[in-house]
Structure formats: structure tokens, C-alpha cells
Length: 144
Image 1 (tube, rainbow, N blue to C red):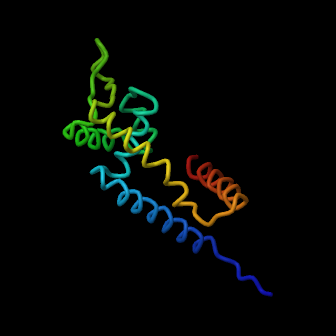
Image 2: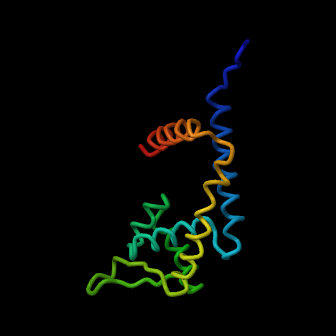
């Protein structure tokens, strides 16, 4: 039996397609809350960890501070988050969920409980372990 070898370029294309498909899938899934995938991630972080600075959120989302600022502008406009500066320090903006944001977090957290079973449906425990190891290596490579 001859096993054809996949090239690095082909593997990168498959990986890129998988990431795009996952992002599009989550955007579709979160549309019931009128959230984008990025907004859902911010709400989950704030719901789990409480108040965070804009810079901490930008690092978590792996985007620039300007990009997170635009996202937070929309979320603030929609009544999901509030930003405030600690006394005497206008350079730092702390972000926290509003009551509406906390309600969305509760609904999102409950919804996300079932997502792993959908996304990883059909994978054996061994395949999940292998995938986790591969994903961690890839993240290490691209986060240098």
C-alpha cells in the first residue's frame, strides 16, 4: 500500500480552510445573540474574568488595540459593555459587562456547553489527544 505524502503547502491550505470554516461556523452559531465570533470571545472573557483592560482584551483576541477599540465601540453602543478609566489614569480603559452583557454571557455560556460535542463529533479520544498536541505545536510556532 502506497501512502501519498501531503506537502506543507497543501497542509497549510487545509489548516487555513479549517480555521476559516470554524470562524464562519461560530459566526453563524452566535447570530442568534446578534454577536460576531470576536464579540462572543470578549463577552466570554469578561464573564469569566470580570473587568479587564482594553489592552488585555486586545492581547487575548490577538488584535491591535485600535481593532479592539472599534469592537468595544460597537459593543458599548449595543449596551453590552462599559468602559471607564481608573481615577487619575485616562490612558487605561477598564472594560466590564453591563447587566445586558451579563445576561448575554449567561446565555452564551450555556450555549457553548454543547459546542465541543458538535465540533469534535466522530473523533476518538486518541484523535482528540493527537489534535490537541498538534494544535499546541502550531500555536507555539505562530506565536513566536
